[in-house]
Every structure is written in structure tokens, then in C-alpha cells.
Image (cartoon, rainbow over all chains, first blue to last red; front, side, top):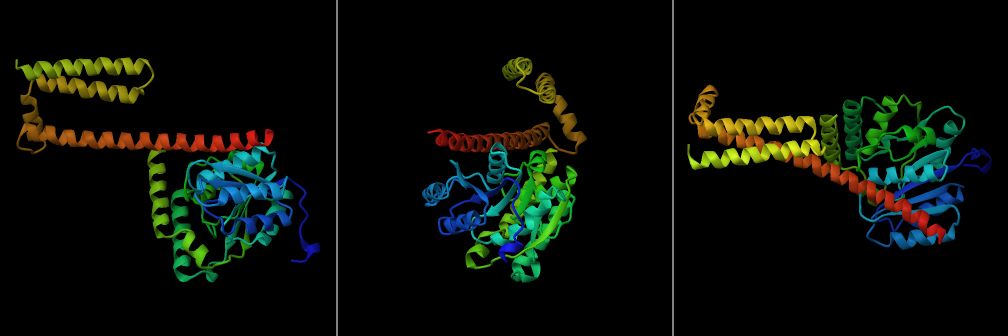
Amino acid sequence: MNKEDIPPITSEIYIILSSYNEEETLEEVVDGLVERGFKVLIIDDGSKDNTPSIAKNLVRKHNPMVFYYRHRINVGLGGAIKTGIKAALKRGADIMITFDADGQHNPDDLYNMYPPLQEGKADIVIASRDFSDMPTGRRFGNTVMNYITYIFQGKMVTDSQSGLRAFTSDAARKLNLKSPQYGISSEIIGEIKRKNLRFMEVPMTTIYDERTIQKGTNTIVGIKIVLEFINETLKR
Amino acid sequence: MFTYQIIIIIISILAISFSVKKYYENNFSLATFVAWIILWIMVIIISLFPSITTHIASMFGLGRGLDALYIAAIILSYYAMFKLYNKMDKQRKRIDELVSEIAIYNNEHEEDD
């Protein structure tokens, strides 16, 4: 993208970077985000590798753009996002964007995400992957997860498991999120409907390599998400 | 009256008074309290009139009173498991909350130094 085409950042934008054992990619990801003018909240979800020391170095290197939060024990993606939202609200964020630290997201995709929020056109923006680019197994899994999200959360979207989500601070305050794990993605979709939030989808590019393919949502995680939903539904 | 009947009745009365105490200390919800009271009153009735179990058993098409008791015990233990699971889930949520609070506290604290 040409420099002139980059939409100006006119608000306090914080990236919520949930990371669990990301020593290999963390520095590159954070550098890329800071270069583009975003403030970064590194949420370390109890990593057991070198993530803490790398993160602390990044805080010093990019002072005052990067902040480090550490969960003493591993909670899960949902827990990390919730801590990130709380931290961003405390720091006076106008907009917060969840981002993965494993290098599968392209920071240039953020340029599509914050303008609708800054202009007041939406409360939540989710970047959807192009399913036709996905490996077959992955495409099937994500399609199934879209239907599961529809059944349990009542809203159909293009990519229910997307990790790139941007919301205004007002929307973030309204979100009532319970899932500690991967169920959070679908739960956010459900909250859009329940809280009547204005929602927009934008396209995103995904970088698939062996590492990111191994990490994301696999069948077992999918089953766990379903069990979590059944459990929450029974308790309602 | 047999000794076992007296023992069971004493245990039941103790359990009922325990439930009442728990209820007034706000440790039991009304639903739990009522369920416990009904359960222990039933235990007292059955120990006073053991023949009831045979009637109940034949009502459900089971041979002996003892079988009905076993089945009731199994159902009750499943219920206990369910309750425990929910309690565990609640505890996990509290721990998650705490971990999150500590992360935010430490971040703010370190910056003050």
C-alpha cells in the first residue's frame, strides 16, 4: 500500500496481541505493528518459552508504544482477550483490535479495519478470511464452525473464527464474554446480535505456513468449543 | 425399632439442622435448601416404614425395595457430580479473573517504579 493511501489514525488505537509461546514471531509482529503507528498490548498467556524476556525488551525498545501484561498461568485465548480489553479501556483506548502473535495476520489488513470505527460507521469490524484460499480441511472446519456459531449464537457471518476483530471502546464495554478458550470468537459474534451492535466485515489476507496451520482451530478445539456452548446454554 | 433405624433418624435430623443453619447463613439457595429438606425427610420416612420402598419399587416395576434405593443413590450421586462440576467451573472462572487482575496490577505497578 502506498503511503498516501494509508488512512490516518485519528484516535487512540490499541492492538491486543494475545501470545502464548510465541518467541519465534513476537518481535517481528510487534515491530511491524509499531512501525505502522499502532500501540501494542502484549498479553502473554502464561508462556513457558522466552516470550516474557522478548516482550520486556520490546517494551523498552518501543517505549511508550508497547505494554506488557502477563498471565501467571495459562488461561486461554478468551481470557487473554478479556485482559486485553480491560487493559485497553484503562489506558483510554478509543479503538481496540485483536491480533495474533503467531505471524498469521498481515498488519496491512488493519488499514481496512479502523476507518469505519473512526468514522462512526460501525461498532465492530471483523476481518474475514477468504475460505477459497484455505487448505481443504481447514475450509471444511471453518464452514462447520460458522454453522455451529449460527446454531448457538444466532448469527451467520463469513468467518466466525477470525482472530482479527476491531471494536470501539463503547462496544467493548458492552461485550459480556464468558468463554475462557477459543469459544470467545463465536461468543463475540453472538454479542453483536444480543447487544445490537453495528457490524461490518472487511476482507483479510491470511498467511498460511506449516506453523500457523498447526496452531489454529483444529477438530479437537472445534469439539471443545461445541461442548463449551452446550454447557453455557444449559446454565442460562 | 431396630438400631439402624435410630441411627439413620439421628443422622437425618442432624443433616436437616445443618441445612437450616446453612440456609440462614446464606450458603444455600432456597432451591438447594428445599431439596435437602425433602431428601432427608424422605430418608426418615423410609427408615421408619421400610416397607414403603417395596411399594415404590413395585410401582416402577422393580423387584425389591433395596433396588429402588440403589437406583435412587446412583441418581443422587450423578446429581452430586453435576453440582461439583458446576462448582469447579465457577472456581476456574474466579481463578481466571484473578490471573487477569494480577496481570493488570503488575503492569501498572512496574511502571510506577
